[in-house]
Image (cartoon, rainbow, N blue to C red; front, top):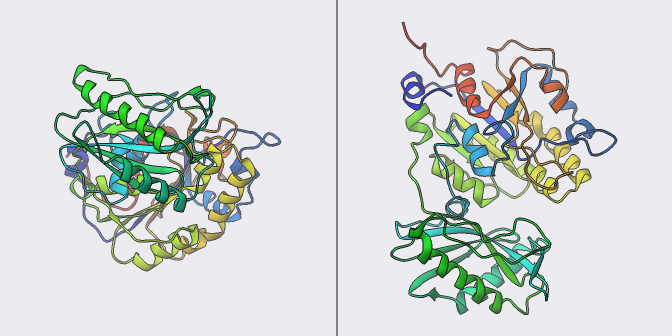
Length: 402
């Protein structure tokens, strides 16, 4: 990738506009009649765009490496995902509007289902409603205000997700996830990965024990899983690096948090995909870079629901003309990572990518899917190279060298 100081020296402030549409987890594996979700979907608008674009496949962090949502998005925003490693807890906290202090250790949390044998049977507690989430978080907060002198702050998110902030002196990162990562395994506690984190591990594990006791009678949400323990890092903003005035349109806290961390303005939007596109239209004159995040494609992939993932893709396709009508100077449609329904989780497979601009060499790709995009003019490339491409095609980069 291009070094930060070099890209910073080349960046220009212009009036041109870039739209980055990220259909989370859109990449897939053939799981229905030999087709991926994109191949099975009816997507005339996306296919029409692909025929006018330059296409390729992106590796989110590196070949063979399955990325989390954080590093996958950082790559698309132009940041080295190996240099900037951000815990999920910080992203979720920022996305919920929590102001973190230097004494805060943040963690992303799930309600989960624990059977009588101490085995996790559902890591998402059946995706309990957001309303139930808020109720259970209040119950826990009333019962667990601190652990061994460390304050505990519990904030509900969407569905089964919430955030726990541990606030006190001497807390440190360097902890394993207190999450077995799969159903059918025992409830898991965190472990310190370095000596300085021993105090944090002890407090977190005591919180998990107490939370499980408090939630005992609230099946299926009768325990908690915590992961992504982190303190807030400092990143250069997209304005500082790329001279952009960026905005984010997302419905889930984690993605809002990531966007906020790199200096994007978080635009208020509704819950539906259509409302997200309306938010783009209503704010189009105010910013020069827009990140639009679509969550449904990822959620259905994680659930192993191929048919609903197809429907989510088709819903995006029907709304694509609303973006085209705005005539952005650069439009990119891609995913942050692949979430094959066959695997029910993130995977290492590359993502379909297409870029539209008047300053491209249109390739021979006629459809927007994995098999076609690998034939495109961009070939297979690292996702961290996408942002410089967008800047170049928006005429936002000056010449390098004499």
